[in-house]
Length: 461
Ligand SMILES: [Zn+2]
Image (tube, rainbow, N blue to C red; front, side, top):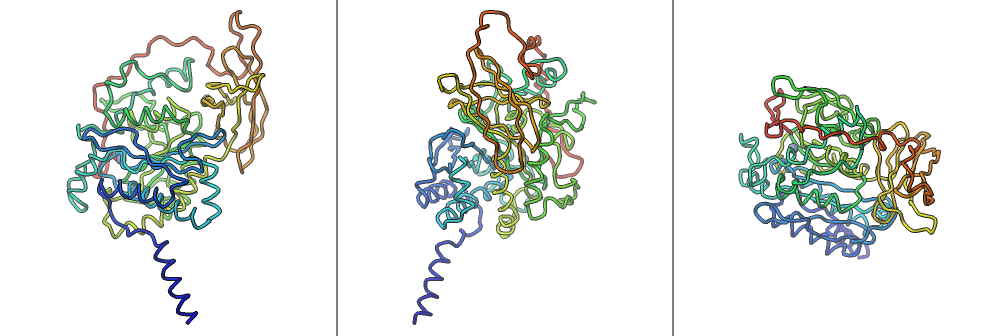
């Protein structure tokens, strides 16, 4: 009898923790699923909407944190965005699976997940293009309409819809000028789609540190820049490796995903070959106005783009295998936010200094402190000269050695400058920051479409 009872308990337990059936979720089902996870884990989750699509569907985010709705100083914010192309649906389903998984494993006391949720604020947006998804889902898998549902309801490709800041930064890299937080054009709101506008306002309102944007149509981890530095040839931008100043770090972030993934790192997928399963975006094909370049150039966030399946709309039967192939990678990537250095920037009276600039000598890309005075600078192991500067304060420079494990805590306490009224002194290691802003750079032919098809029949990912 006790034996039967234990079988009963086992079955009950298994039923409780068994994953949801692997299937596609239409918009209403997706919303129900997010609230289901929230109801199962109310103390560590929050559902919020960042705005609406063209057709009025909410762009929902599920947040995981030990204090949902609150930024805790020194706890980094990370995000996953799925289904930006409405017909690339695997990321959407994987992010729903991930949400269930984080909730269940937290409840089961899985120490790795408990640590992650307690030390990180995780924002998961399963669908950035719910309108496109409904069009693609009405058509279903196994059809020839390969691009049906890719765009939003106004027919716009959202990954070609962000303000183009690359032109400015490529100019600045050569001639001097800011290397971070490049300003938006004055009229940006009228130039972008509702989904893009909502996402831009979202990523400006949180101090995101790390992010991934989930796509389909290939299997590779793609890192910035996406837009080639090279000049145009017959109307197209040339394909050419176009690294950021953080190239080595981005390669590592991409490799963490590809090697933790079931098969991405093998390189041969979908008829393409990518060594280590990673690629610089522009060396694959050049793309303007994409989201990952925008994150890097306008915010503190380091974003990569994950291409996760050859089939953009995999059959339902494939979903479980895909989840098992991606689960570890999705978790390891989140854990990558805990590396490099982080700390507080304070004044002499221990008040927070927001928007202080943190520069690392040898890497021409600065980050800034958030509203709470905390900053996060992802770095590979090594020894660095790090300088904090803020208007009205003397710069402070520290030498820091970063190891491979947890991020090193490096706090700055800035002293009020007595030379405020006198002309600017050049701060040490300040890169190009103090140089005069260049004259207005002419944006590249903005009206021309730059959607460039790959050589294969697949079309853009
Ligand atoms: Zn895509």
